[in-house]
Image 1 (cartoon, helix red, strand yellow):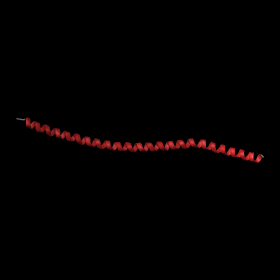
Image 2 (cartoon, rainbow, N blue to C red; image 1 turned 60 degrees about the horizontal axis):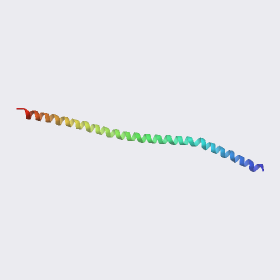
Image 3 (cartoon, rainbow, N blue to C red; image 1 turned 135 degrees about the horizontal axis):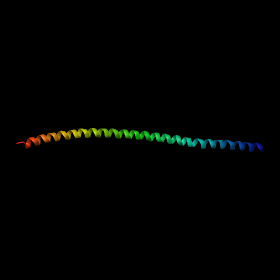
Image 4 (tube, one colour; image 1 turned 120 degrees about the horizontal axis):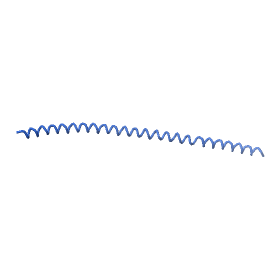
Length: 87
């Protein structure tokens, strides 16, 4: 009679050991997955930020070019008005 009882006890010990291993491993796996997801989101955010910075740089260049054009037009207009107003 003790043989099946001993086998049952041994199986219970193994199952408890496996459950303890799972309990100790699952939080670590979850933490690693969270870390990987966080890294992936950070990389995506960096790519988006780099794209936005590139567009802002282009807009800044266009603005500088536009303001230079406005200055030239203003200067030409002042010269023309000055000549038109001179007797």
